[in-house]
Image (cartoon, rainbow, N blue to C red; front, side, top):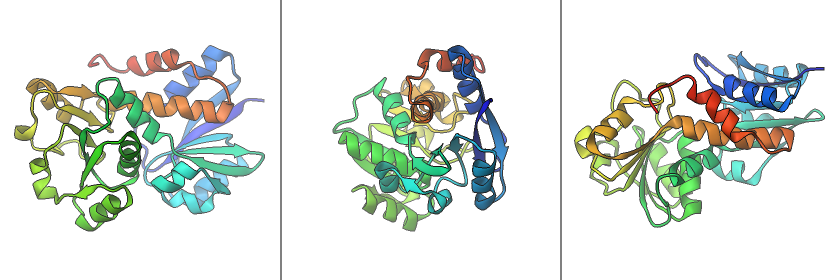
Length: 262
């Protein structure tokens, strides 16, 4: 019988996770299918996981935080982050994990060490929380800025970071900037503050090179596409679900097919 996996979120208008995971299943000869589930309510999502059943699930906006109360067990790291992006359904029990932070670390460390670096995190949602956990673990100096200062302060308190008002974010001296906001059509960081030699990363991966990263390229910054984060968090998800090594290169080839800008 075909094993079923999937991604839950709403509105979930675009995702490359099915392409990546289905390519991995096919390459390894595993009879499994990864599907997209647009679910309007978190309770409906839990019901779907149990009744289908889905053996493994990727969790995306807006459920990374709200899904946690419905899980049987939550991994210690996901608890610290306060967000789950991966669910394992083992014999009807639901286990929550977070692999986003691994995606952030692996993607950034391809271009820069993180220890001692001054890193600015833009945003205060689940993605930003995962990034802050990653940077704290790697020994970076963390600045956090979002449009809601109260949320910024809470996040800064949780991860020993410095809370920066949104209007002053460009004044905080930094070497790495990561965009964990959904802002796409407007710049999350003023372009005049992007300097040569900085490292810029965007969690948004559609398009793979966002206007923020495009501006960085023009200014001589090193840029890291959200597609690399998607790959690395997906590799870890695959390994949690199937308890075997993921075919990383095969998964990357599947993602690369959608873009010529990398």
